[in-house]
Length: 260
Image 1 (cartoon, one colour):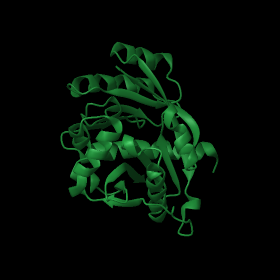
Image 2 (cartoon, one colour):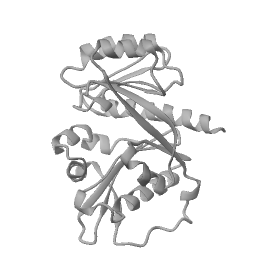
Image 3 (spheres, rainbow, N blue to C red):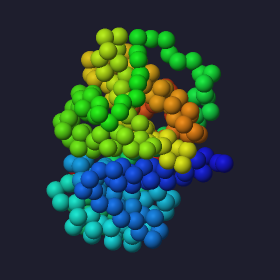
Image 4 (spheres, rainbow, N blue to C red):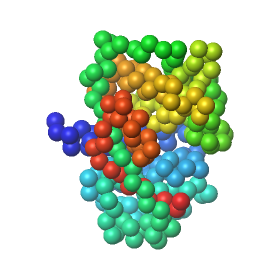
């Protein structure tokens, strides 16, 4: 397969993962159009988690416009967004402007092959212990992400509920220091042999000590063991060097249109 094929497959897996996440959250709303454009409203107070999402290389502007009407009606107080590969055309920008989605964010879409993450890959020798969480530890997960991202823990708990953390294909992790304190956390979603990573974060006072690196490598090893051949994620510019250090490379950019 070419790099474009791998990227297209990862884009479809990301879209499927967003649909699965919304399906696991009570009170969510999901709708797919004929050509595959997805509206997934988790109703979290985070625009990226209430997207009109197109995984197509050329998004269907008419489908996005139709789903924007639905999103505006069904989202309630939750902010929503339009997320797509590449740059939006004038019709999509017109739709976004009509609904006040005038903030444009470009997001690197990064991939790494998991061929090198088999059982012969040595685990890092350090004080770090990485373990997978069950749903009944969702408060631990929320506490670490809250400290790492500076977001209210109740906002995170509304998304990563016990049911979400226990749902098939979803795996939440923490890295613990030598005192057993959870200091880094992240989540992965497995769809069609693609592993999507999200919300990799470390408590500020423990950053730059290798916890995030050990956590990410453990997630990739587990993904390989579960049958994934490729991992992907959306990054921002400050996090690019970190993800490059564990083997990810940018294959394309996505655009998110939101109100803020």
